[in-house]
Image: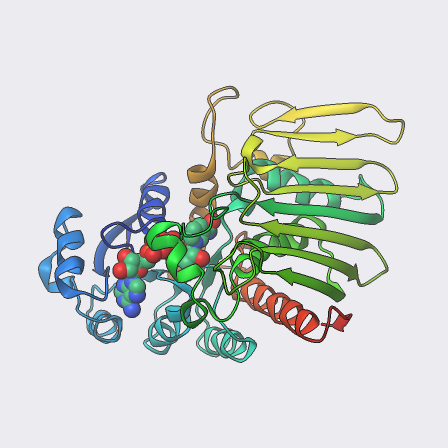
Length: 378
Ligand SMILES: NC(=O)c1ccc[n+]([C@@H]2O[C@H](COP(=O)([O-])OP(=O)(O)OC[C@H]3O[C@@H](n4cnc5c(N)ncnc54)[C@H](O)[C@@H]3O)[C@@H](O)[C@H]2O)c1
């Protein structure tokens, strides 16, 4: 497969996720970074460009300039990665879609439902692929759970317990550095903190694994650590179409938890227990209570999921591989579009439609909380 060229907005000096995207994309060696606007400060953007060996002519002062210039080049980028804070996802994605360039944007997709729907409409109108990097859904074990539930092995889902506790913002006066500051700032995060950051992962994990659609929800979004103005602990009761129920919990002051996304799914014929910090394994409990632990790379993993493995069992894969798996499918689809072999069933990554669902979920929670923790229909 010929390498394709991509660009990045965000991911400048001292940032977190941009570098992870670059490393994850490199795992398969199918795409090369050739352009970027890595920071709002030109000097910082150039510094990162230089460190990454980017041609100075393709290191841009603004994302608007980058979108226009790259679209005009015969050898322009084939997709852009958007890894800026949430507040700029919408304008940046919009600029690249309007320029006809496919997008990979980190979650949450954007700040409002209107923005999200507009991005979806633009991508569909222009027939452009759009990946939203809900990283954890690239794990082989997460894909295995999705395939297992699709095949009916759990029967009808009855209830789901899902949570994503962190403890990094547990203390008064500690704003978590550059990454925490914008998350805790209403202007930069869209009036939601913990639920937008972590709750969208929970919502997407459950939706992806189970296929369940939220019919209505009731949210309690608390501001607990003194000095905070946005939610740092959220509990959401969920009712899905078809009658199943769920409970979601997210927190940023749960001391002792790092990135503890955990999903437990209970069906008529058994249960599934999964924890992303132990992403090489998945536990299934049969109808009679027999507990079976399956290992990524070992037998018993659904073939469609196992195909994403890169290493033999016991040589640990993790979060970067998971992110890389999303890009594996995304880049394959882009290649297939270019050579005329693309079909929609090739799409095995979270799309803009999943991003829209995440933003709808957050806004329903905000409404429920604002109205005194009442049930809100989606
Ligand atoms: N998928 C995941 O698991 C995961 C994990 C962490 C963060 N994220 C998401 O990734 C995004 C970035 O988070 P982060 O923690 O890396 O933030 P960060 O603050 O560490 O980095 C943001 C970068 O974007 C740059 N930037 C800001 N505005 C820009 C603009 N207009 N043009 C160009 N560059 C600009 C900043 O200079 C910085 O380099 C957020 O949306 C966050 O929710 C996702």
